[in-house]
Image (cartoon, rainbow, N blue to C red; front, side):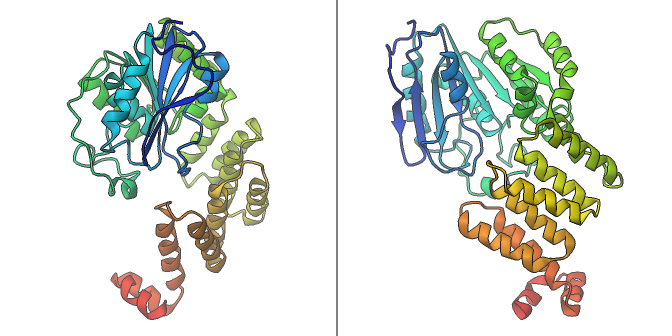
Amino acid sequence: MNAATGPIVAPRELFRSDNLLVRQVAGFGSDVCYVTFASYTDDRRLDRPGFGEEHFTGRGIDAIHVLSRDNRWYQHPELDEALRAVAGAVAGYVRVIAYGSSMGGFAALRYGASCGATVGLALSPQYTVDPAVVPFDRRWADDVARIAFRQDADLPPLGEQYVVYDSRDAYDRRHFELFAARSPTIGVPVPHGGHPVGSYLAETDMLRVLVENIETKRFDPAAYARELRRRRRRSAQYFYVLALRTPAHRPRLRVALARLAAETQADNVMYWSALGAALDAAGAFDEAVAVHRKALAMPHATMFQHHTLMLHHEARGAYDEALAIVDRLIAQNPAVLWLPHERRRIRRRKRRLHPLGWLAGKLGLDPVVERLLG
């Protein structure tokens, strides 16, 4: 093979700390090696699969996977040591591509050059989440509040990088503009691809096309955009995002689009939950609860399906049922930072059913009434 690391029969660890894991899966003899960075996740196991690991292993492409236990955008003091381990392992490859999505996309473009990559490929990345730099993006405010940011904004950028993003998403579009202003960046807009755009690309088989064309230096952005548009109706994600972006005063259209998403990829539990939510917004609660129960019975149901059922009960005004679900979710997922906010929000809505609670809401005295009413 062309890599200096030599053949490897099984995955092996190059670096491990309490926060980070670097795992190498190599020995296929490929000229290309990927360095992937894991995305935001509620799975805190370091030994979970790396980003794209199954895909690259299946294709016989060498890869090194960087995983983080917490959603801190890789702002760990031991990151430099982890990157040095990666850089030592990729020496000798013809083409080294740093790759990631969202949080992982940020890391791929920010740290790719430091770990020996020459090319970056990022799906819906953040330029940074540091509020001093991007005060417009508060999507992960609870996680960001716990981050001690590394002073590494002056790290060298990659000489060749691709950013695939939803051009109709105001946040992701602004992040792309920041990347493009700093270093040569090829933007690949995916209108209504959502955040992140990976599902849209995978469902149209255009993620495989993207990766293989960048590997072989045959990527044509204009031709790619044309083909992606031609295939867009194969993507349930496309209909799902259109449903989310449908104005509230058009609930029937939102339901129709959400139903198209669920029927286009009937084994995807997320799209059924979205259909249930659209039915709730339209006031079709009886049909909605049947859809929510269908989603919960599917093999890949997660805490998010329970959360969507919680929102169904809230929409119906069944606050005790909603609180019972969120309390159970908090007990089962203590590291998920946004769940306590949901509990406080529902409790506040419930309190306002009480005359004193309603008055407190008008006067901005919710904390006082919370102590009185519990």
